[in-house]
Image 1: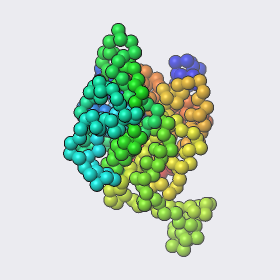
Image 2: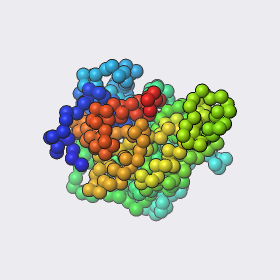
Image 3: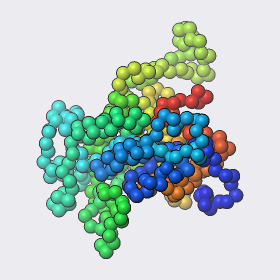
Image 4: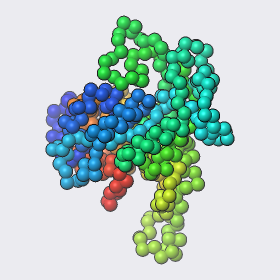
Length: 399
């Protein structure tokens, strides 16, 4: 699909209606943060992923954080400064750097752990390269990660948990660079791959699941939304999410029983139509709202996420960087068609704030509106409503 720069025959883009980026990484390029107030987007949901960027996201939120006034429908998005909503989490690419001292499922909770033993147990195949292990930092306790994340979340009431998730395909970076003569890219926040070769090593999936599930439980405890990464692991991501809400599924009530109880609502067409909500009157082990970021699964898998017994609300975001990065975008197009209109979000997933991020947001909004058959202004309004539901639990009355 054409980007905004490639197609000059379209109508002007309605930035004034408010465009909300559901997932991006501007703290990967700290020098770009000064461009955020001048961006056309209204709000950026900025993700933390590893040790080096948690405090950077916190600082960005302290300086540029959105207030309740930011989300007002009466504020002209084009004439107001772009703001940020922070998200704090530990990405699966860095999950090997955490050791589980919670004793979940084992009854044992080590307060300290041997570095070599830890990395040989959570990296697969188990590394024989001593230099590779020694190049890794001392692992951090999961309990410490959770306590710090909770502290940040409590400081910022709109904050999410993310980016978290599972990834079967990624490999850990090696110690050597692809181009030995090339210096690390200036201005990039440490901790990324940044031109290093890939090793043969993956993070063991059960360990990734432990780190993910602990963060999902924290989000449930505080009633926060989450942004979930899932690559080559769509089935196991769903199973892990499902484990968090097991025993809390919504109760389906038949139309006949609903009438017997004297419901004042009209019966729905389906035999099992209405659902009792637990109302989250107490902390739950599952997040209330979940976004599958840059969703890359088949459209047929959406049904399991949209099952009406699931007590969480599932959203699906799409980006040009991931979903339209190759000539065969049919998979993404079919998924976008299948996602309910009130559950779709847009994102840039970009590591640098500024004009390019705005351009990518415009491109994906236009693509979704074209695929969905939405008039552009209607689509921008719908996507804004969806983001507010996802982040703020502000459910539109007409959805």
